[in-house]
Length: 77
Image (cartoon, rainbow, N blue to C red):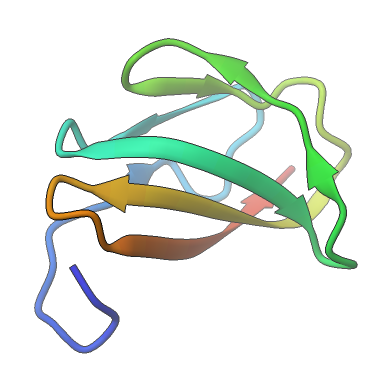
């Protein structure tokens, strides 16, 4: 899944306030604040708990089943 492909959903909802669910073909990797600091988030196989994040924008990184990195922006309300 690269940015130029016609892709399926990566995660939802966006914006989020408590939890996001992400595509089962992806593995969550990291969450970063907009200033580049890594933020710890917890979750299960296909969900992330974002209830402890302050309102704002964050960058989420995932790995797809082919080893490609998928980078997405999320807004927390």
